Structure formats: structure tokens, C-alpha cells
Length: 309
Figure 1 (spheres, rainbow, N blue to C red):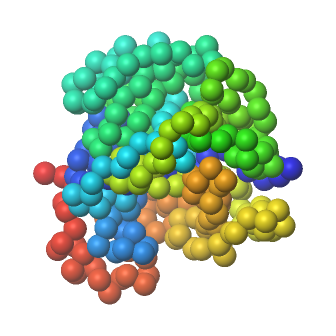
Figure 2: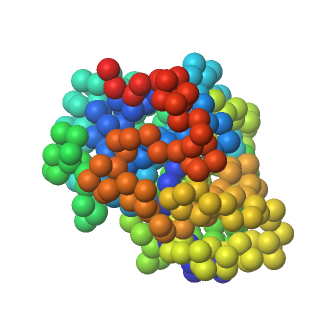
């Protein structure tokens, strides 16, 4: 069993409008845009990162907004709901705020004894705010006060036809089964970061999910550094997983592999962080380009959708 993985690093999803996506995460949810860059493989598309003040591992939601992309099809083999941690007693204030910003399909429930507010983002993205005692310092620069501000991720849900093989993979990655309620099983990393929970929902009769706007593209797990990442990669290869070489993503190094349930997993380093190419006081303000796309700056600044206005 591995002990290098500490919980979530980031979650990356697809969107249909960069401007609407940016407005939802910065205005409605009050997160900080910590990086404005482009997709390594499709530089005509933004890669937008939102999180706490520093973009700490376990706080960062990222998006590829493909203009006018069709919505994804919900089903099995995907990350269903991405959950954020908020202070106890703040759900009423959040419900009022999200109503003001036009969030869809809001409802409240309790999972494993904890209150949640469920809602959808601009592309039908499934989110939840979970009440928790979380001492991470929130970003409050976008007008959401500390008494209710998002602390980072709480958890992510995977919706799978067969949960057995993916449960074994999580256990190999250092997660332990901690609770079970009906078709939902909760796993957590002992001693991990505050974003150390994964819920698996077994839905054997569901059809396969189809990716599109509102779908999670991949889920990333955090390791401290490149040495720990290489240990994880070697262990996964020895277990029979097809794992990519280490890829430099400018703000972290990444490896990728497909989980048995069909969800794309990434293992990302906590280093070097989002301040490697711009001052921490001005994260996410200017368009930053990977070196291989630097020659495209003039065209991209002319053609990429403005995020404000």
C-alpha cells in the first residue's frame, strides 16, 4: 500500500464559456483565479484555475472552456459531484447567495451525518458545499466573508457501475474505507490533507457517462514532490497500470492513468506552485503561456474570449 498520496490536488472539468465559468467561480463562489493560461494540447482554449489565495493543493478547481461545447451526459464512469468545505452553519447564507447568482437545482441533504447544499454550475456541473470544521484559511478577496468562504475541497464522488476494482485501487493508493451507507462507500487518507475524502457510488444499471461541458475531465491526487511521485509511478507500473511518463505542467509535474471504473486519475506534485511565474499578489491576472506556445501570444490575446466585461 502506498503512503505518498495525501488527498486531492485539483479537479479539472470542461466548460462551454470561459466568461461564464470565470464569473461563476470568482463572483458566485468567491474563489480566487490563481492562473490564466491555455490548454497545453489545444492552446486556443483557456486553462483556468480557481482556488484559495495561493492555489494550495486540495483547493484548486480547473477548467478547459471549449467555446459552445455540448453538455456532457451524466452516467457511470465519471466523477459525479465535486464538494467544497464550508463552515458549519453557513449553508443558509450560501443558498441565498447562489439563488442570487442563478445557480440551478439547489437542494439540501445529509451524507454520513454532515449537512450538504447541492447545486449545479453554468454547464450542469454537479457541486456540493459541505459543512465541516476546516481550519484552512480561505480566500476572501472576492467579497465572500470568512464566516462562509470556501476552504477548499471536501471530497469528490465517483459514480461507477462496479465499485469493487476502484475500491481496491483507492486502498492501494493509501485510502481506507471509513463508512458505508447504501450504495455509497466513503474512503479517506489517514493523516492526509483536508481534501482527503473520496465517495464511490455504485450504480450498476446506469449507462456510461459521456464527456462534455459540465463533465469532470480528470481528478488529481497530491504528492509532496517529484521523488514521491516517481515512487507512486513505479508502484502503479508494477501493479499493471499503464502510466504516462512524468509531464511538466509548469505549476506541478503530472502522471496520468485510467482507473478501472473509467475515471482518469492524475498524480500531481505540490511543487513548484502557482507563484513560479508571477508574483503571489497578482496571481491569475495576466495570460501566462507555456513556453512552447509563447510565440502565439499576439494571436491568443486577440482571439481568446475576454473573461470580464
